[in-house]
Image 1 (cartoon, rainbow, N blue to C red):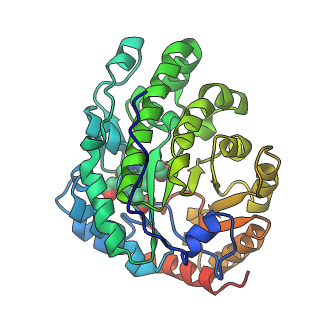
Image 2 (spheres, rainbow, N blue to C red):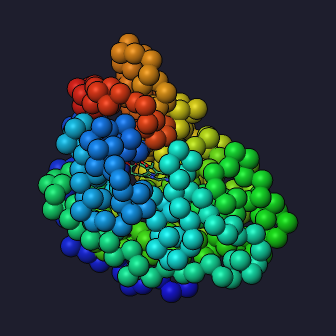
Length: 359
Ligand code: CP3
């Protein structure tokens, strides 16, 4: 596998970043907070800026990516920015015919269902995601001392979109390929691991301060199947980033039963959805052998709880801060992405509550 040279970069040194301190297992003066999908439709300034530009076109426009990424940082005062992009961007850059359809998600013109389809899947060259790298460079100067998180889709979640041809509730075609033709399955996931790795290393070379590997749909698998069919490929991605020395966050939805295995895959920080209490997650993660320090966790606030009013939001924030004390490091976040109808003022309120809390 041809994955290019060290993720060398002019990476900024941000010793005072509470996000980076916590992500490395330290205890910053305040609990850091950012939100998955913080850049996007919950913000009127995002909707205004995106008007007339298709999602994928926006992702390849460095100035637009920079501005959209900055919006939630300015508005909410979060401790980290997440690069505005999408998990399918490296697939599109490599030449896969797919589109992001508003209100639906990624739709693939010719789904991958056979060994021939897998063989025909193109590889990614870093030059093909140069506009993303350029956006990262713009952001590292625009952000000052706020950390920038780069990201990619994990092999399983990317495979689900490619095999199903779009979003899927049951992932039946994906699992059919996985069970019926393991050789083709592993060949597909190996290629997707290389694509994710090339995309992440391009972001690291351009200066991102941390990375998140989104395996959003891995929770659809049993632990046994996750270990056999997914973990080796996610491990390849995470191990391939180790030399960059930045925190590697690994997240999925409905993954309470997979948390230990996701740490084992090489995560420095494990993302937790709202189904598993943060202290339960810490206990499970601490049981994984081979780690010198305790678990670092991120997440857990139910994005739907932000619709339930001030009292519920206060109570949930307090609960999560309290449960997070069981961890070696705690990064406050939602258990999944910000929902489009969320009142952005509630998000700002959460940031203020988290920052005002005492550890
Ligand atoms: O602020 C951020 O978090 C950065 C932006 C970001 C987007 N996609 C922008 C986006 C991130 C981190 C992603 C990752 C992503 N994309 C994931 C993993 C995270 C997760 O939510 O589990 C997944 C599964 C996708 C695939 C995808 N792309 C979906 C499910 C959708 C939503 C479809 C819809 O319209 O409801 C997209 C499109 C997308 N990606 C939008 C945004 C802001 C909406 C498109 C728009 O604004 O027009």
